[in-house]
Amino acid sequence: MSNKLFVGNLSFDTTENDLQDAFAAHGTVTETNLMMDRVSGRPRGFGFVTMSTPEEAQKAIAALNGAQLGGRALTVNIARPREERPAGGGGGRGPRREYGGGGGRNRY
Image (cartoon, rainbow, N blue to C red; front, side, top):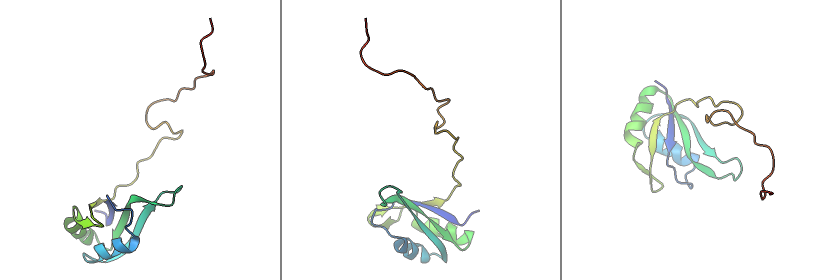
């Protein structure tokens, strides 16, 4: 089992220090990572916390999943690796079709 945790439903005011403090009560925190929007620079409302052992990670999940932080109920679970996305930005919807021509009115 992994010791990296996904933490969701974070308030946009939550800092990495807030995460560190909340999780440190349940074991040794080796890393916190708050995900930020690349364009706006604002928090995206989720992050990751790495605990020193899988046992501490499990303890943190038991204690903090559903607990309040910044007025919001946290979602805490084992972080899963990102799924590979197909190249081309198709989003799994099948082949992308290109349509030529412009819009406008039909000509009769």
